[in-house]
Amino acid sequence: MKILNRAQIYEADKHTLAAQEISSTDLMERAATRIFEWLDKRLQGAPLNIHIFCGIGNNGGDGLVLARQLVEHGYHVEVYVVKYSTSRSPEFLTNLKRLKARKIWPEYLDSDSPIPELSPEDLIVDCVFGIGLNRPPEPWIGLLFQALNSSKAFILSIDMPSGMYMDRPVEDSEKVISASHVLTFGGPKLVFFLPQTGSLVRQWEVLDIGLDKGYLQGVEAQYTMIQGGQLQSAYRTRSKFSHKGTYGHALIVGGSQGKIGAVALASKAALLSGAGLVTACVPECGYIPLQSLLPEVMVQTTPGMEQHVELPEGAAGQTMGIGMGMGTGPAVQKAFLSWLKLQKKPVLLDADALNILSANPEAFPFIPGQSILTPHPGELKRLLGAWKDDFEKLDKALEFALKWKCILLIKGAHTVVLHSGKGEINSTGNPGMATAGSGDVLSGIITGLLASGYPPIQAARLGVYLHGRAGDIMAKETGYEALTASGILSGIGAAFKELSGEVTQTEVQDEESENTEVTED
Ligand SMILES: NC(=O)C1=CN([C@@H]2O[C@H](COP(=O)(O)OP(=O)(O)OC[C@H]3O[C@@H](n4cnc5c(N)ncnc54)[C@H](O)[C@@H]3O)[C@@H](O)[C@H]2O)[C@@H](O)CC1
Ligand SMILES: Nc1ncnc2c1ncn2[C@@H]1O[C@H](COP(=O)(O)OP(=O)(O)O)[C@@H](O)[C@H]1O
Ligand SMILES: [K+]
Image (tube, rainbow, N blue to C red):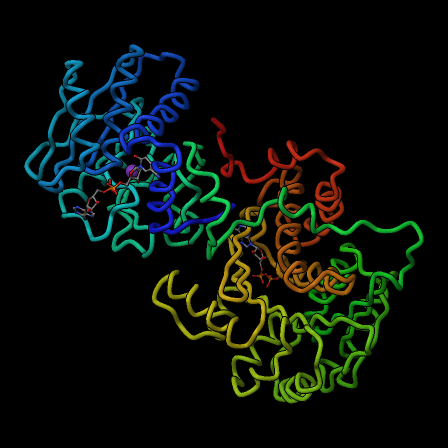
């Protein structure tokens, strides 16, 4: 699914009006009708109080149409017009007239108005600002939003939680509508996925308002979502006459005294992700534990007892994933930097490999093209330097990936895979995955996919998706707290089965994060 920016959404609007020969008021009527249907299906005529807060632009216009339709169907509705500006959009004015023609009189709110009385049992519909917000709202609007949030009523935001920008962080998150649910048009917005703003969106859903399909299909979006349905075509089936040599050899390099488990998790993940052969390369202290833990994995040691002092160059047929639990002592640093210069094929760089790189930026040019870098937020900060907000983080990461021709991940609740100036946002995973070693499992999955022949970008994209699905599948059994990295390993098989089509697509969609549904006409 594409994530459009503001200009593209307005453009989609224009194309729709032209292609379907309708007016913008018609499109607003259609959008609000979809919202009405969505609500009516859930409320079934319930006699609750619905408070619709409208701005003076088209987001407010949507609210006025919704109010009219709800009243026509017998709902109890209060309409408020939040007068944050003296101008009114033409579509807003048309619908204000239509509302008054039905003897529905809105209450006008300005900086002196008292906050309307609200009860936790009420429903608030937030149509104050949509994608048009481009500067900080006046302080009294922020206080109104704060009051709506503290009412404890369910808040349904239309298109965007009011007070949230499309393209920059908010100044004060307390002064933004904290939406219980967002019904959005033209696809999800980038801000829904970023940590600073995503926390204000509990659930979102795209309402299909019949925007021009030609435009939506053709438009090039900088950000897209990684979703199961689209990945099925990338999945490679295994042929009957294949053998272990067909699926490559993953060489997982890392570990140090007390951190051999990181290599164990990554090696097992590579094996479970289809690599034909897996070798774990650890310092001497890791030999016995790894041989005992993982009978399928071959173990190779390098001379150091507690840390690597040399690193294997890697044979032609091997695909390397390096860095988990490796340490950053002077000897390892030296070994890593010499090793990096010899690498020609894409490698996966994780954890301490990234920490060493960050401390030695002169080595960036030696990162083999198409390598996959998997930093967590702390490692990312070391690599890129500090950022002031999520948008600057994305820009810096995009620039890094472009400059060094690599695939850079920003791991988190919605992991972003960045490459060639674009970003792909993962839809799977859950807070139970914020647990020790879960990143090692991800690195192993991606290295396994890379070894078995998936091109690097596909290995990264599939890897983050499968890792999240494995976590989601297992969290159903364990809950979030008891989900461990080993638990995620146990879910990898089921995640693959689902992707390979053994589970129907409808089921895959149901299983995916509940908030990515598209409601059809
Ligand atoms: N294609 C679509 O997606 C459709 C969008 N529609 C609705 O139209 C909305 C966009 O409407 P608008 O462009 O009128 O924008 P909004 O309704 O979001 O904002 C209204 C206007 O307020 C002004 N403004 C921005 N920040 C302000 C501030 N801090 N203080 C005072 N004024 C401020 C801006 O000039 C803006 O145009 C969408 O969010 C959606 O709800 C629907 O009506 C139909 C179709
Ligand atoms: N709240 C969350 N929701 C979804 N996934 C998460 C969440 N927190 C962490 N993860 C995932 O778990 C992994 C954690 O990686 P990392 O911090 O490197 O772990 P470790 O270093 O312990 O192996 C990443 O893939 C990340 O996307
Ligand atoms: K809104």
